[in-house]
Image (cartoon, rainbow over all chains, first blue to last red; front, side, top):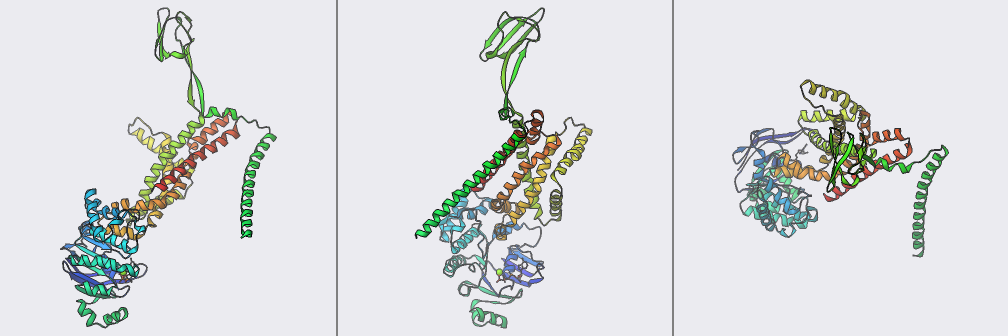
Length: 243
Length: 333
Ligand SMILES: Nc1ncnc2c1ncn2[C@@H]1O[C@H](COP(=O)(O)OP(=O)(O)OP(=O)(O)O)[C@@H](O)[C@H]1O
Ligand SMILES: [Mg+2]
């Protein structure tokens, strides 16, 4: 489903940072992959390369067999198939919850108004906030906003969902409701790549855990392997710090 | 408890006192002006000001031949007067209500057959209309130009970016009056001469070069306002929109610009108020807008003080209405 081959990404402004160094990975359809690692290790950069919000300099990224780094690829078509949920929600503040979820359906998927609204209400129901459909984002709690953001991404009927620390900006009592929505999604067989510090989630839901440090994948494996017998020193150190 | 009430009362009293001082001050200034004009024997003629807004013009129909009135046939509001002379005949269609002749009257060449008054727009209102027209067109063109330039300014394409920077810097770095002259005397001459040379019948009137100068001038400032407005929207909004598969244009149109508009409108209002006032410079290229019209009025009537005061108030009415409209729009979005 996702095939990453030897990608590099370096930022030059404000100073040179090698954010990704020779990263390769293969993610199968239906797989739930959790990416962990210390701050600045390149987790977000890797995720953002997968829908080309950042452009990897060298290497190849295939989504469903299509090379997204090829300039002839229609990236908007790929992005419609790859949903993304951000740490800071990024809902459209000038639109109601319902319109947040219908906007891209209508202008990207070209769905009729009623069709888009119907799909939106179904998804809002699924994440448990259909009663807020006519509210504006700033009238919602953080947890509710993030669930709207998930519904907004799902409305495009994506094949893959990317989550970049979806619960990091939330108060502790709201983390559970967002993780529950993600768990439901995982059970339904969605292909997911999740950057998170929620080790409970990783242990319970992940098929595979990837540990990154200094822009490279240091170690990966099943959650059991990871949390009981990590093989690298750096992994052990990181886990000892956060567990 | 009691002392705080006393203080509040004192505060209120002081407030009204200072408000009173303000109005007294305004009154004193006006009185001062009036008194000074008395000192130099200025004759105020406010009663002659209304004719600069509207006046009645006599419209007469005169006979072109001599003879007698053969018939006066009334058809509702209109009437047809037929005159028979020696070997010639004339017929005039005129308003029925104000006919000065009847059947059988002797008529000489040049006699008045009918006369009525017609309402005409006065000099100041004609000038105001030109100012309004020029400003509205320049504002609309300025917005379009400003949005396009603002978008080009933040683009990463060097052609777009450098063109917009060059344009903005050129416009902001020279006086508007000079730009108006360049549009009128340089570009205007060039364009009209080229049109003529290529066999075009029509020439572009000077008014349009004035409008172009104002629109380009406003466009450069609007561009900077638009750029700042767009850049004040968090990057996450673009990323969210693009990650859903929206194109750049869709993202701008549905997500970024609607949000940026709220921050753009207040400085934009200031820019357009400036534009209305700057249109007074167009008098320099023979466009009869409000200021030029006032000048013509002054030189033919010597009512210098009255006309310039009225002129200023008319500008105030325009700018105040505009800021009211924009405040209304701002509340709506
Ligand atoms: N747009 C950018 N411009 C410049 N440097 C960047 C940019 N984005 C990321 N970086 C740098 O690249 C490195 C990797 O960043 P990245 O955001 O991928 O880390 P991360 O693992 O997601 O960290 P965190 O857990 O703090 O989110 C960091 O050193 C960061 O400063
Ligand atoms: Mg990150």
